[in-house]
Amino acid sequence: MKKMFNLLFVAAICTISLVACNGEAEKKTEETATAPVVKNDSTPKPTEVAKDVVDIAIESADHSTLVTAVKAAGLVETLKGAGPFTIFAPTNASFAALPAGTVDGLLKAEKKADLTNILTYHVVAGNVKAADLKDGQVVKTLQGTDLKVTIKDGKVAINGANVTAADLAGSNGVIHVIDAVLMPKK
Image 1 (cartoon, rainbow, N blue to C red):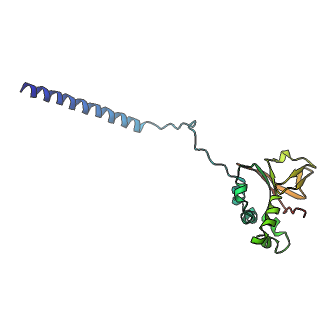
Image 2: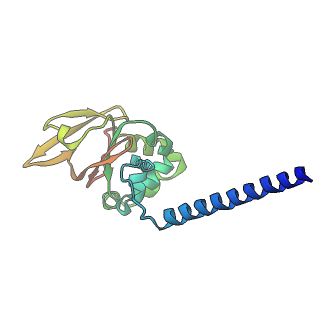
Image 3: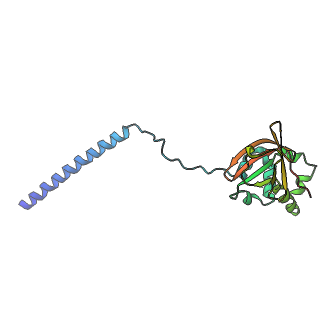
């Protein structure tokens, strides 16, 4: 009987201790819940993936014809590559200024090589910012021939096409918007 009494006594002490500890935990939880939350601005934020040059063109309403042409030529994967690339990107209006039927003709499967030739004539290897361009400079295109830079009264032109927006930076290069389609010499 004495053993039984000791066992009950120990059980009672344990129960009281557990209840008391649990009450303290609940009290701390309530205190924590009502404590103001302090935002730590030094907490690293998830890194945003920077857009590549293709993504920038896709998001531009003024470059839908260029995007269609890049897709038709099968150059999307190439231009999404590591690069870096400098792209002289003609606007939709630039393509519309070509002789009637030119764009439609170039988008045909049998003209893929011609389209690729024209599009790679608008791309230079490297990350060439507007500040890097000098009057009279010649840059080699991915197509294999050269483009000539002219600067007059602070305005930049590439083979006669005016740069209307410069240094649209992507994760794998830079885009300079131009107002004409560049046509390589045959």
